Length: 357
Image (cartoon, rainbow, N blue to C red; front, side, top):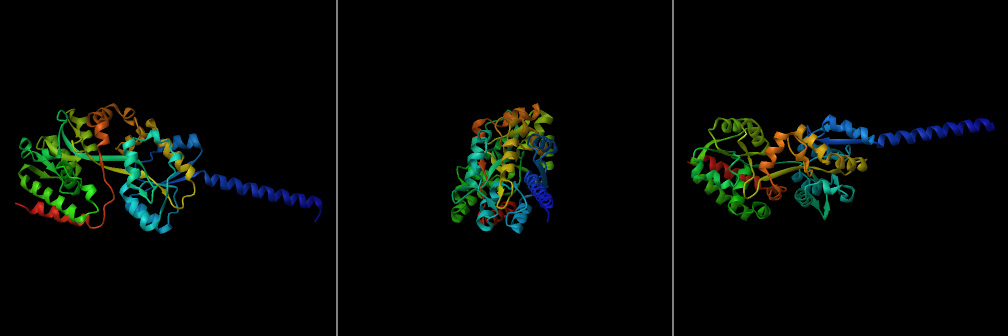
């Protein structure tokens, strides 16, 4: 082969290597996000892509589907996922589908401290943190917003006789347990003690069945009962209370004295994700209060971003600030992972309450 031909071939090889390198670089600048509907609105994606050059590919999912997908691939296929905090610890111990989060790569001052601390605790395995908080919501009380000093026990008060509604579901049992001075979450790993707590709650709810106008099963049914005035005190979700406050200016969500019950959907890293850096950039981006407010408008729930309530619509911001101050935010009782067997105990308790005359 002539010297000129050799040079030509070397040039072709260099171009091929460079092309492959550029191709890999382009592929690396991609974030594969497995999340819930509304958590990654197009407006936010467009802004992130413009600022970072990272393409975001969204797959919508739910808890069961997320875990199923990650189990099938042993944690591959996505760079960032959003399971609820109580779906991380057990799945990680059993399937090893997540990798630890490097908190030094996050702007942790953007997070509400009490939510970050709770999520770190509930998603830790062997001293390593596997989740940080994003979207959250609570169940508590819905009543006239002038009545701020309320307890779950008030659902059994003579002041609301025949004007009460709640679901016959596990949050009601847990809410009453806290209101009665118990700590049901602390008893999660002691089934005997947990059964004793349930027994005391069962007696109380049976004794005050006459207070109940109706057991609601769907959010629309509850809102209609409150809207019509048939019910004046109910156990329900924060978003339902805020919807009614926007309509009526009077009814609103109230955080009970013993603490509202809270759920959190997190950010977690799949075990075989390929672009952790893009994942950290996305988390830091969406936790900025102005961006977080856009996600609240899309998802209907607030994020764990400090100050984001100041950037949502004025009506929603006012409702939120009436419902929550810093003390009531810090007093939220966040659901931990549920040990095996507890939901069966709760189901039997609820059946006996329903059947009691």
